[in-house]
Length: 113
Image (cartoon, rainbow, N blue to C red; front, side, top):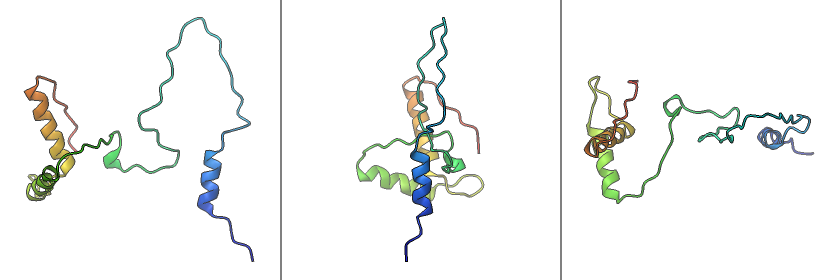
């Protein structure tokens, strides 16, 4: 008895294959064009991105554990006017805006969720 092929493996295989029958068209133009740049966060077609992470990027910073522990404690104990816990991302954004003010850079204003 033979095994059924994995649907995931076949989906990945077809997604990785370049389109062989798609013709490439070269357009000659007198005006110089800007080089094409890749988008910062290229998501494969059909991949899910949580709405809370749409149009955002992640950065990693290496800090002593005391910073992360204090941030977790602050997030756990701090509440917004509706009584909900304030996420660490919002606390870090607020801290960065305070840093920008200190060094005379414009603050980032996000739309309230």
